[in-house]
Length: 147
Image (cartoon, rainbow, N blue to C red; front, side):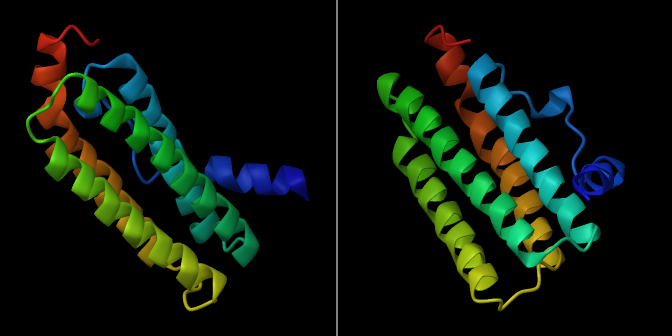
């Protein structure tokens, strides 16, 4: 059975295919972003594959934990190097995590069946955040020597 689950995950279409366009040019941040994309693709595969509710919860919980860790990394760098828009960036992290917690709660209460609502939010959140917010701090951190 475990082999079939792995096979389903690998054969499901990837929701997001990583490209250099998503890179911010800071190795640890780019690695974390790729990890988040991988988790989002795993969540998509689970939804598309009709996996059990508990499996969706496990994946979403992993995605949330990875996001918390990633946001801490970003916020640490942005604080250390006095990013001028730090407060807005941190507020966006808080807003996104509140939405993730709401989805986690809905899954736990079985108010959602793991429908594409989860995946659509994840895609908008992750890709939108990288492209429209994270790329704004790139020049500032590069000027400070962060690579």
